Length: 212
Image (cartoon, rainbow, N blue to C red; front, side, top):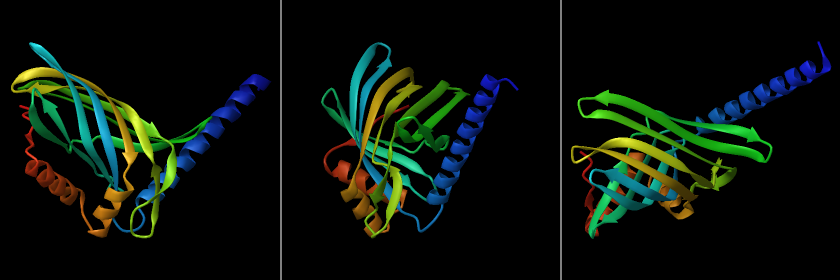
């Protein structure tokens, strides 16, 4: 085998071995111990376009991840033309969490893609965000190895009040040690966390954003 081919083969074998070790390490961490939540402060900045308007949107809230079941959800608030809305997103069934070793170190990557055709038309969504791993305190005296910050993008096609709509945004998330501790000390599930913050937003005058 020529020298260049042998070098390329060794590089491919090294990359595959590194990826396998990273994946096995992640799944061991994610499936050990009692259920606990990681909570992140999230800012989602972008736009929603549906005939005849295009609306700039900034949604601020929380992204929550169950470290055992892998379930992810998010809740946040925004204001449109003076009206106050909250948004709950539990549509993360197609998401994937993995780790990739790069020349600048390991990266935790959360990605999601889905599409469907229905009587309402095409619905599509995709997201990709990443960040370097760190040991995060979960409020019970233990830590969980995951990204302290996550940044990325989302794209989507959906319906708003019966009209086709297109959305695009950038996402920035920072681990919230205080909210993570509150959730885990109370033994909350993802649903409990969402319910608590939904009530908080409703008490402040926010209503659900109409999405159909």
